[in-house]
Each structure stands twice: as C-alpha cells, then as structure tokens.
Length: 296
Ligand code: NAP
Image 1 (cartoon, rainbow, N blue to C red):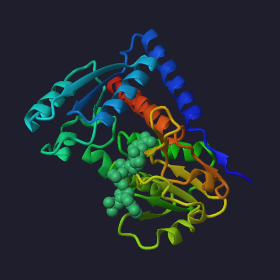
Image 2: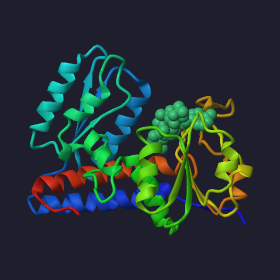
Image 3: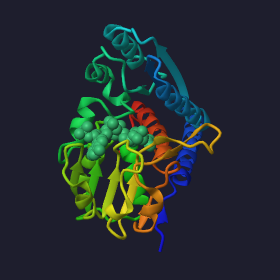
C-alpha cells in the first residue's frame, strides 16, 4: 500500500487561518497588531525569495511586516545598531535576520543582539541552549524544526520510545529537530557527512528526517517499511520539460519511498509551507508576550 501523504500545505493553510483569526480578534479588542521586522544583508537571491514569501504571508494574516535591506558591506556595528533600534520599537514584536550572513559578519553576535522575547526565529544562543537542556523551554522554537514536529504530531506519530534518525546536523534544521525529538522521548541518531553506512542506520528508523540538501539522497531501500519520512530538503534539478528549466525535489527519492514508507511529506508541499506558518505563529506569540500574557 503506498504511503500516506502528509499534506503540509493544507495543514499550514489551516494554521495560517488560525493566526489570521487571532490577529483580527486582537484588533477588535484594541490590542496591537503583531509586527515582524526582517533584515536581509547582501544580495543572496534565495534569501530575497524567502523573505518575500514571509512578507506576503504576514500581509495575508494581517501581521505588520517591515523589511530592512542592507548592503553586503554593512559593518557588524551597523547591523547591531539596527537590531538595537528594532529591539526598542514597540510596533515590532519579532525580529528575523535572514541567514546566511555575508562573510565578515559574526552570526553569533548578530543573533545575540536580538532581544530574547523578539527572537521569533529561535536562533538566539539562549533559546537554542534552552532547547538542549532538560526541563528548560526556549521562548521560541525555530520555524522549520517546529514545523516538522507539528507534522509528526498532527499525523499521530508515536515518538515516545521510537527510533528517530536525523540526516543532517545544521544549526537551523538537523540539530534543533534532533533536540526536539529527544524532548519527545525518541531515541535519536544524527547522521552527517562523516557517518559510515547511512543506509544501515536509516533502515532502523521508525521516523526519518532528511535535511542534507542532496537531491533524492535517500533511496527507497534505505527506509524501514511503514516508517514516517519527513523530507526537509529543497533542491533544484535541471528539467528541460519545465518552462523555468528546473524542478524542485527533496532529499528523498519520493516515488521509491512512497512504496515503502507508512507516511511521507512531498516536496514541494510538505515542510516548506509549515516553516512560514510557524514563523507567523511565533510572531503572534511574540505579540502576546509583549502584552504580558503567559503564552505557555
Ligand atoms: P546544511 O546547513 O547544508 O547542512 C547539511 C547537513 O547535511 C550537514 O550536517 C552535512 O553534514 C549533512 N550532509 C551533507 N552531505 C551529506 C552526505 N553526503 N552524507 C551525509 N550527510 C551529509 O543544510 P540545511 O540548512 O540543514 O538544509 C538542508 C536542506 O533543507 C536544503 O535542501 C535546504 O534547502 C532545505 N531547507 C528547507 C527548509 C524548508 O523550510 N523546507 C528550511 C531550511 C532548509 P556535515 O555537518 O558533516 O557537513
């Protein structure tokens, strides 16, 4: 039986509608509209596309979004000065600095400059540190990893005691998603470019998260029958049959995986839309924190 397809697009639309409804309820109660400031430094085309998508999603949800585009040669002090201004701006509840930064800027120092309660991307060292500690909770969880966790929960996947394998250990996906899985009592194995015999490890996985950035890296025979597969990868592969000359594929060979897995996310339409939805939820959460609400 082919795998159940986890429809991230539909789930994300539902979440975005919920955010929109709450934002409009806030407005009718006279509470401030949530505000997100985005900061792009340099001319990375992918960053521009991602930020444009985030702005559009904010607009649709009734969230105020203000973009700051700085040239690639902006100094560390200038970036930190902008963040300080945004930290002090009461209309701005969340600050997102689009990564990666141009060479020469200190990413950790930039993220450290963001006020903790405005860290809607969840990459502030204290938020990440809390994610790694037992009994502590971050104020915000990074959007892509929390989108992955939402999809697992929504699909009714049992994580307690499950064998979870995460392919990739990046700061933005692999590592935080591994920490979140541990918090849910899964037994987690993290694989990376120095790991021997990855297929042997993935075949033990009840839950497999792929975030390596390699097109169709995971083959069907790497997957344990019935496993849940979450494909975070977004890769362009040449395709002359498409008008734009390429198509997007994930880190998993989807057609092969469909025959073996119990459930799987498609690319596109899986994790990608969830990332945006989770950012909107985090921005709303930041506005509620600013109201002085215990947001749990
Ligand atoms: P990244 O920072 O490039 O990290 C890739 C990870 O994969 C690293 O840990 C690397 O190992 C590991 N890796 C690379 N090649 C490998 C190989 N041949 N065997 C084993 N491990 C290997 O990537 P990322 O930021 O996590 O992104 C991964 C993918 O997810 C990309 O396609 C990206 O576009 C996509 N993505 C999607 C979303 C979304 O919203 N859908 C969000 C973020 C990222 P080392 O640590 O040893 O180098």
